[in-house]
Each structure stands twice: as structure tokens, then as C-alpha cells.
Image (cartoon, rainbow, N blue to C red; front, side, top):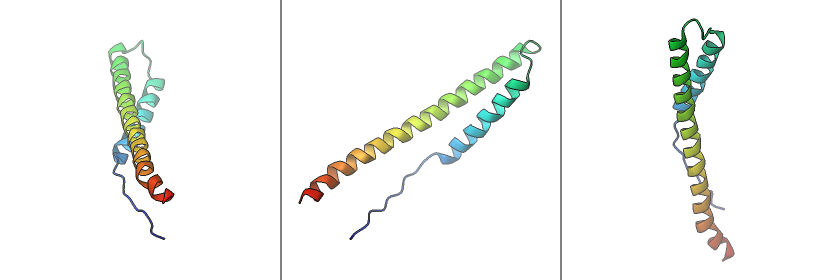
Amino acid sequence: MAKLYFKVGSDWEEVVRLRNEIAKLKQELMSMDGTQSPAAFKALNVQLAASNQRLDELVTNAAKAGAEMETGFKKVLLPLMKV
């Protein structure tokens, strides 16, 4: 029986980097007194929001690609299986 192999490219390194950056930013924010330096506190919050948004984009794109692959496989393989 033939086997189907495929390779999926991803932004895995960026996902790992973002996850580490998000954890670091959260830790900094938890240890920071927002009343002492509100500008720095706000800057960290903005950076955290941007990192979370980028991570969400990567996850959403990966999910869409997976759904498209599944649909494509079904369109190609299911008719073959009925033969």
C-alpha cells in the first residue's frame, strides 16, 4: 500500500520566540509598579498586546491551512476510495 508523505512549513521559531517574549513581558508587568512609571507600564502593555496579536495571527493561519489541507485531501482521496 502506498504511503502519503507531506511537509508543512510553519513559523515555529517565531511562535516559540513570541511565547517566550509574552511570558517575559507578563513577568515584568507583574513585578512592576504601574504608578511609579506609568509610561513604561503602558509601553510594556502595548508590546504585550502586539505580541499576543501576532501569536493569534500565526495560530489562526495555521488552523486555516490545516482546514484547507483536510478539505483538499477529502476532495482528492474520497472519490478514489469509492472506486
